[in-house]
Image 1 (cartoon, rainbow, N blue to C red):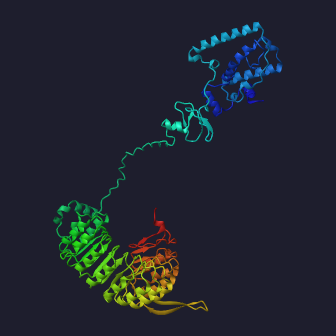
Image 2: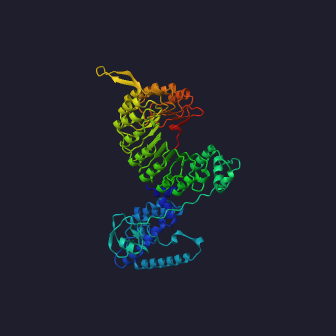
Image 3: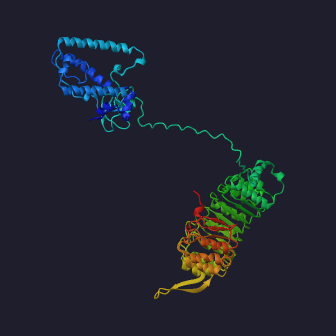
Length: 629
């Protein structure tokens, strides 16, 4: 038995589906659907009176009296359906829509007599009048039986065809392929082809405007309990006051050299040094001037500097990229910097070779010349420097593009008076033979030697050039020399590892080493160096070592790393970055053994944990667990 039959017997109504609720809101019921079918079939019945009997719905109420002669079972089924439909319409049951009345078997209608036909027409007219009367009544007497037939459009009547299908253009009536960019006709219905949509000014590819986000209102409450007061630092206050009253700088009176250097660092820290406030740092009696960031100074400012500081003996300018030939020409006059002996420039890109030569001619008293990143400094400049400045003791040609082996024989004319040499960062590397010849002539009194990034240098430079000829060396920088090996470094410090080809065993042999222990050693980024090199250098220089950089020695064992804390009592700065065996125990041993330690760098040391030991006054940089991204 269907659900309708069960609902009709016990008056139990089941749950309503979403479709049933939607149809109910639209006023669509089973009775209205049946009445619509009945209304459509009425004209057919009237036409059938003249021809032949027509079939009608089995639940039609206006049956002739002769319908009683119908078979019993069909009559009872029709009666049950009418009773169930009446109960479900009154109770608004949802299941009635699942089995519409139209599905019931239709009974064959016999031909009516003229009397019956007249009676039927009279009843229809009476019903029409009754319906018109009820339509004019108030809404309080609303009845579902008098509703108009359902005539609402289908929800799919204006749906867009599927992409890839064919459709006819509503304007030009040509057939086209539907895509996701097909636009509806204005006014509807229908769809437009691409040509018609473009002619109508419709942009099919225009992206819909993003919905504007509602601005969240700010919290207007004021929390008084936790009002945090922030105060500017004393340095920032001083710099602000000095910059504000720069025109009255004479009122400050005499400022000591130490205070002046502190003010210079504070102003340059946030790049506030300009042509207006730089005059605060000038003075007729000043002998030393350091500008840590001269980015904002133009060429005229550098020219003025020479006239306002006639007593300078030491000048250092960092980031002086705007200094040019006109500035150097001003410095080359006899009245400019007559006592200058130390010159250090970082980034003099624009100065050409003739300007350098003129400057060297006008300042023969120079004994320290240090430049970094000067691509126009060539061999002619070096020859002019050696010829005119014969008292040079400190020479730095760092990241000079023209630097090559031809420079070394010219510079070697200075002989043993050179104390400081920095030839790092070249474009063209020196060769072992050129370095050996140069150090043989100039290495006896060298205190500092930097040959970083000369990628062609090998162990021969260590054993044949530095070890025998640099007897006074205290600072050695050999970063990024990929040809160096642990055996070559060990020989530099007096230990040679010889391997017996028969037994394949290595034995240690003592050889000649550097005569003086090193205070500063930087051999970072040399990935082939490992435990033998570290053990030999600690055996040689641990008593005097103050700064050590072995970053990139990835294969160094933990046993050798522990010796740093055990032997280097005077160590102040150490960089063991990318040494994979560095652990918390290695760092702890450094904290305990190195009393003067102030900085430890452990970048890339993955075995260091969050529990890495610390000590007051020691800065540990590079612990992964302390880094926030």
